Image (cartoon, rainbow, N blue to C red; front, top):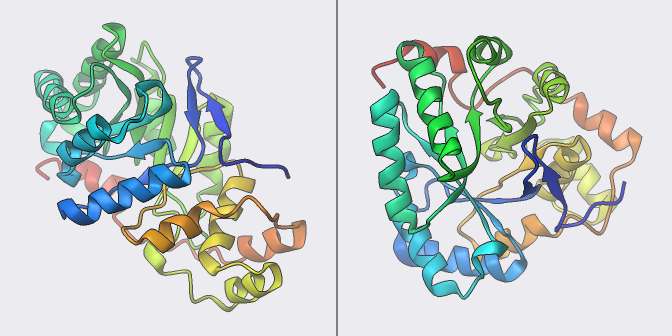
Length: 280
């Protein structure tokens, strides 16, 4: 399979989004984040994923202002947190995110978790932002198939992506097939399972076979499964390593070995747990 760092998805509303992005979750130290972002941009990352909950939208916006990057050359995703959901609350949350990011238009705005009591009001607000051109695309995060089924009954605009926990221990195969049917991109957060999978002998052996690290093997596995990835790191060497996955390919036997690592174990909350915890 031929893949390139510059590969993009054409989302279901027609815009292009890089397949391989850079996540900034837990990057809050200003100096370290700046170094990480400079390294990511130098390596070639052009998709940057943040959220209001990450408390670093301002640092990301400052970086864009001083980086010298052309606005058309980078793609920004952000999300509203659970206590920012609801119609008016979402509009206010977006206004704050937009101000911190210092952007006239955000590329992709996501509902961070499905929330029972404000489910449709939040999506109506997100659709309003899209209709007004303040965002180029809208999507969701941590939505299961039944959440998407519920959303589709009243939505005027379908999400372009669903950003969900996905890694070899929890590959989310059934949801992946469902998203394919709806032409919604499957994007993996925590594509390395927060590092939990990296000591697996299978990954170590495949790394030795291909001259790659276990992390590089996992990230390549995602891409060959047509899953978008947003790995995060604040370490320059690791940032470069996570991008160096386009000079080899996993064969069918390799892919099958990785598929057999599926344990069904998550590293975070199941969406329905957060779905019920509406006060969070």
